[in-house]
Image 1 (cartoon, rainbow, N blue to C red):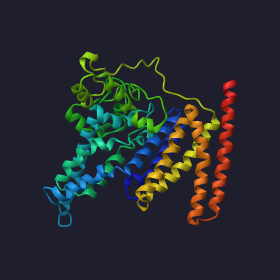
Image 2: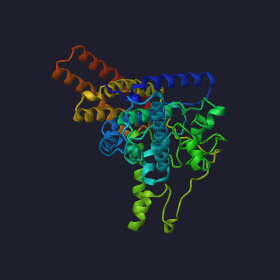
Image 3: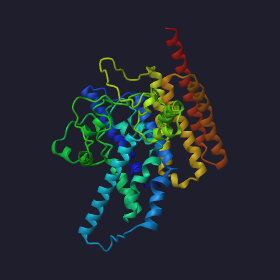
Image 4: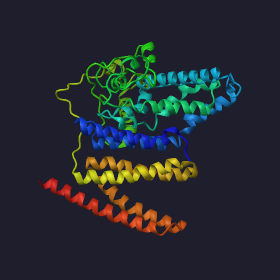
Length: 416
């Protein structure tokens, strides 16, 4: 079973999201939009799936350095209680400091921003945004924690504290909690982090904290929350597709690199701040001010029948993905890749169906036929329980008839 604290916390995440939805209902605030929440969760799913294959960056290299090049060795079993407390406190501070610099550089280096921008793309601010994580960020940020390995802190302890640091940041993605008095002087809070997600020029690249806001105050990146932020990125991706969300910035970078004629400037572009261009192409492009009187969020109105259909398919996908992640250690690398591909098909289509794209409709029909057929084949090959055949047939009939009526509804809307 997977002992990753983040995976183990999945049920708690959804309980808290449910509580926030109840608060939304009673306070009459518009905190959630279904396509946006689905896209956020989908990015979280693809991030967890990619993590199955990128652990070499997150943990593997750290372990090699710890085993072979650590300058110190700490034996917790022989330490007095005060020494153990100091050990964990120092490790916590080092992990949080490393997170601050990794996070800050993810905003200040173009190449790194491509691995982090996913987390900032939502134009809402709620607990589902906390789960909107990049599939590629670890490739650019893992090295910031490697000095901790040289100091002799055990790999398992490092991984545990890092996971707890990440878990802490879940609850600060909400608008339902205001300012928190004295707590704000030391710790990262919803108010501080709302600033970080703002696309207003005064808020951009501020408050990079993980658990402690003290680093931003020490290194000059702190900004208190004043007026309500406008959430999202300066150039919205206008898509609910989680795979495109992970590559969109690199697509833009490719376009910019084609415009830059000099190889030296191409190289500089990779490591300069997002928005940078050579002077002969206009120079740095600062974030534009947000005209709140004309600003509109990306929206894709859809019939209620589609909303319920996507939720139905998505709940099944969430259950299946959770079971897979909890038991990932039981699967071979090839099996992990195949199952991850099946999950990605579901989450991509769950988002793109809201965009009413023709290719998504065709892909959904293919999926409706292939997925239950695949389950039936696996049942036959492995001698699984016969009731699974009935489950496959029921899924096919429900999905096919439901999706057929959705297409009829769209056709009626087009004629209206």
